[in-house]
Length: 82
Image (cartoon, rainbow, N blue to C red; front, side, top):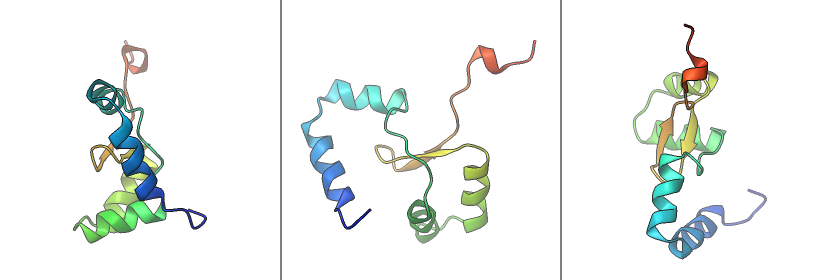
């Protein structure tokens, strides 16, 4: 992004976090970011069909650098029709 070594910065920030903080980030999805063209390319390189990644993006999935995976939107009981 803008010429900054984002991946390097993420790695440095990750090393500075405590284990509990890392776990909280992953479980709470605090580390998720929008799926960008770069993320799509990354998953295509890993073998995912591009259209599948784009479909997940359209469904509201986001990318978790901590898990290196795509996560669905968080659902709660408020989201359910009774």
